[in-house]
Length: 155
Image 1 (spheres, rainbow, N blue to C red):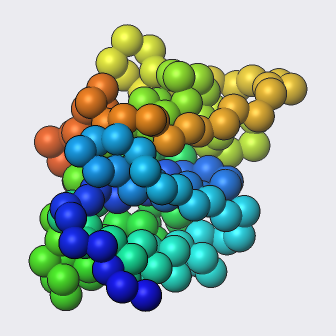
Image 2: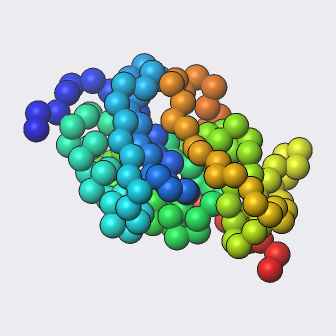
């Protein structure tokens, strides 16, 4: 497939199912893909497909909180892409993409934002909360740190 010659951004939301990837040109969403497959099976092929299709200048990813395995895999893949292809990547807060709703932690524990602190709280029978690729990236705050955000819930 021929690569389109523009500078694009890739946004990855891999902390919950479905995994979502969005391509942005001038901060506007122009293409997206999602999958219900396991992160370990599908994330790399989805990213490679986007890298082959678009001239991606940098990558944003949700660095947490959420699925530890998904966060670890995403970070390792992006760190490798940085080394091999010299594409910078940046982290974002997961609450930006689900309207600040609780994010699944473990069992009936969920991550919530209490002012600027992330804590865990128990919820029973909570409805599934979807993550949404924004139509534009203008309101997305990029964290100063791109390392995974691990918030360990009290067990």
